[in-house]
Image (cartoon, rainbow, N blue to C red; front, side, top):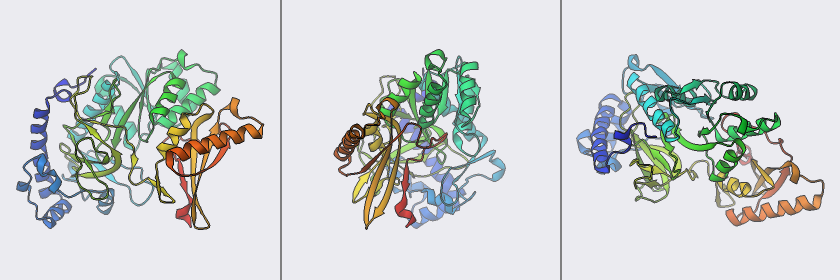
Length: 433
């Protein structure tokens, strides 16, 4: 299913023409309407006329989350507040939130790109989509909501949490699709099993999962336990919310809606633009947004781009599943560690469940990593000898992957705290000392 064939299957030459045109318009807008950008461009001796197309994109200044916080709440808006019809804010855990303003045209754009996202997953007018993302300042709930309505789907706006209600609605309302975080999808699968409900008896077929990193191993676990097809989606509130990129049925990368969001890959250290296919930090320039247009926004997400036409027929550039983040990377005894690396190891083992907690601490000036992992019921034995063998095997597998030794703590099923939103995988106690 393709929602907008004209845009999603456009020849690359025509896409480039569109991007050149919209980039020049956006640069002109922010220069004249956003004092912050004007000052940054003047500092680099850049005038709007200096930007003639994509080849000049690298001349423009970067924008960071800190820039948004420093201009809190509305100083980066490019239109009068009378034209802003909705405000969202990020779910950041430190400092001021990043505030995003939408004009009526922005809301229409957002609905359009989310409708594309849903059609990528073969969701349409015959589907009942249960939205278990949170509603409110977080963009997930309302973003999927409006896009679902545009796609013609029947929306069940249950919001996040309240698992008993989620299960009741899955049964009674015949939900064919669910939108939530991948960690909550696993939690829901556990809850169904606990209630003695076979997912095969539900109408549920599709999961629209995002808002946190997850591995292909975790996808397999979700698909097996919920008996659904799980699709990865990507978005961030600063750019628009959900709808920035999504997988199609080929699941060979996430299609970026690049007629609205212009991607680059840079080296996070040198900030130099990398060549096609190189892995680095994803950067976006919004080229159609009116309320909060952003130039070269650094997402901190690590990935690479593929400009080859997809077997599904779409010509939109694809980003690979995010490989981690340049800012949530753990450095432990000089070794770079991403939680997703540890998750991949654990999910390949038949004895462990896909729930884990990483505890990073410092003892005698030495960094220590402890991995707490749940063991499946029938493997959690009273025989200490067998559990010690399992711990040893996990330790060896992690060391082979990370190049780093870790303490392993096996815990019983249902021991680790579950999350109905973004899961908190890491507790770094070094920052508290």
